[in-house]
Amino acid sequence: MMKNENSTISVRQRQIVSQYLQQLDRHLADLKAGKAQKTFEIKDLADLLFVSPKHLSNTIQEVLGKSPCDIYEERLIEISKELILTTDHTISHIAQTLTYDPSNFTKFFKSYEGITPKQFRELQSKTELLTKK
Image 1 (cartoon, rainbow, N blue to C red):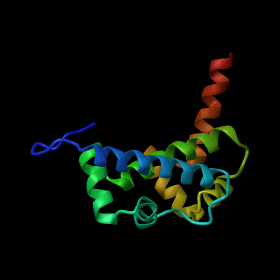
Image 2: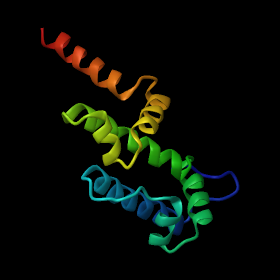
Image 3: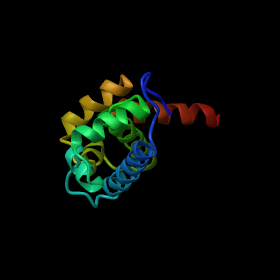
């Protein structure tokens, strides 16, 4: 955990971060399973934790050194890669499962990975074929 130069991390701050990560993981599991109708915003997660969105954002930034959005997007990319590699679903279907418009999903994925989801899947397939020989 990170520490701000002027203060130490309080028990309450650690608790808020822990609860945030638990709620985020639960929400992402629901998204992955197709059970969520929309993606949560910081306000939704703050409401679940009974704190203001600003307080939640500031606490997460101070404790983890990353914004809630950064954490959310990193975890979403991991789930995206898992779905791309472990299912036969189309990229469009995966995007919709994660409540993305397919073209926006491709842009989002490419901004993190440097390649499109389709290229990622094809590259992994080729790598698997080469390692099986």
